Structure formats: C-alpha cells, structure tokens
Amino acid sequence: MKAFLLKNKIAILSGLIAIIICISLFGFYWLIYFPVVEPISHGNGVLILPALTGHLFVFLSHFMVEGSPLISMICPSTSTTCTRWEESAGCIEGILVPKTACAEGVELGATIYLMIALLTIYFVVGFAVGRFIQTKNN
Image (tube, rainbow, N blue to C red):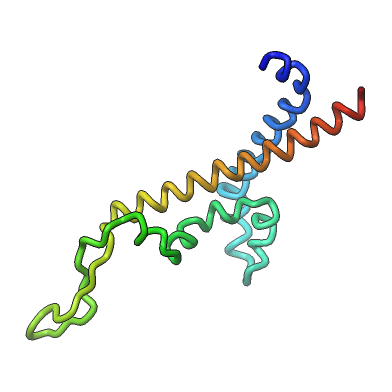
C-alpha cells in the first residue's frame, strides 16, 4: 500500500485537488450562480453549466427520486391520503402512501449517493490526469 501511495503521489494529489474543485463548484452554484443568474434568465439555459459539470444531478435528485418507483420500493405504504372528498360525508376514497419521514429519508439517501458518486468521478478524472502528467514527466 505504501509503495502504491509513493508511486502515485502526484495522481492522488490531483484527485484530491479535483474533489476540492468539485466542492468549490457546488458552493459556487449554490451561493452565487443560481441566486444571481436564475432571476435574470428565462428558460433552461441556466442549467447548461451545472449539467456539464455534473452538479445538476445532485441539485435535482429530489425530483428524480420523487418521480421514480424507488420510494414505493423501499417505504411501505401505511398512511392514508384522501383522493375524493365530499362536504357532507368527508373522505370517501383514499389511497395508501408511504410515510413522509420515510420518503424524505430515501430522498436524502439518494442525494448523498449522488454526491458521493460525483466526488468519486471527479477524483477518478483528477487521478487520471495526474497519472498522465506523472508518466509524461518520467
């Protein structure tokens, strides 16, 4: 293991730098890009840059999970939600849905999974670039 670390020192440092860039881009999008660009932009053009860097998938993970069967696969449907209501009789028809806390937990888990996947991709790309530079210099 020690030999691997010494042999790939530049590549590992490049991977760590790529992770720092990924985290910095996330902060940039969250704190600067979306608050500034979104109010003045009309249309989906504002989403191109975050999509190119992969960060859009983390930001939209809530909607991806909400529209997928993932929540119903993991969370049992135990809460009743009324689908048809009459003034005189109250709730006439209802369906069973997963509890909100369970659904939110699945959404959080998916967001964390996508964050880890994005960080891993950035590390691998940075590692590959560092490895290329290291072999080019030797």
